Amino acid sequence: MKNVLVISQHSPFDDQHIRDSLDTTLIFAAIEQNISWLLSGEAVLALKKNQQPEQLGIKNYFKTIKTLELYDVENIYVCEKSLIDFNLTKDKLIIDVKVASFEQQRHLISQQDQVVTL
Amino acid sequence: MAKFVLSLHTAPTDHDTTQRLIKFSQACIESGHTISAVFLYQAGVFHASQHLELASDELPISRLWQGLHEQAIPLLLCVTAAEKRGLDINQTGVFTVAGLAEFAMLASDADKWVQFK
Image 1: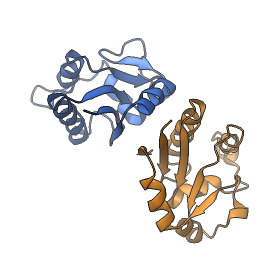
Image 2 (image 1 turned 90 degrees about the horizontal axis):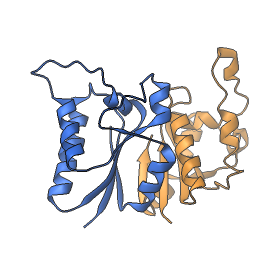
Image 3 (image 1 turned 90 degrees about the vertical axis):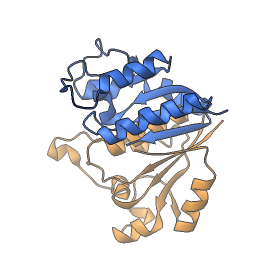
């Protein structure tokens, strides 16, 4: 089993970056690897509650983010500084996450076999 | 000796990234390492288009891929990313249509996954 980390740094509707990150995270979970997902910068906005992209004709893929828990993906990390930048707190997010300081992010990355940005 | 998987995330217009992937691949093989897959993902899937028309003094992208193909490096194409971008998945040249899961299994088996973007 490999430790694989997906890092996202794009905003939720910037091309398909977050959807690709989500797909990759779910697939590595499905093939039973130790997958983690770190959202940093504008990517933290993908986890914000009460978003209605349907009103803009955009698919609501946030529902799929909630399925991470069903697939036992527990290692979802968000950058502590990024939450502050966007005036967000854990209770304003659609899923339970681990809030990571820069030091904790450095440690997380150092534990991985594969690190990818999408 | 190490086992690599490589992924390409940018379109054929990004000559620098394309060159880096090709040269990295050649250096891997020359050093005795193995590459279990090169995977076209995100905008990288456009490399599998059979409609690239490049002037003779441009970077010969098709020929570079042909070179990797002749060295028996598996060249894979993400089917979902390709379909989303309007590629004809029945005409992909030296690239083999694959799923993200197939690549994820190869990546899990590799020593290192290197991204080019």
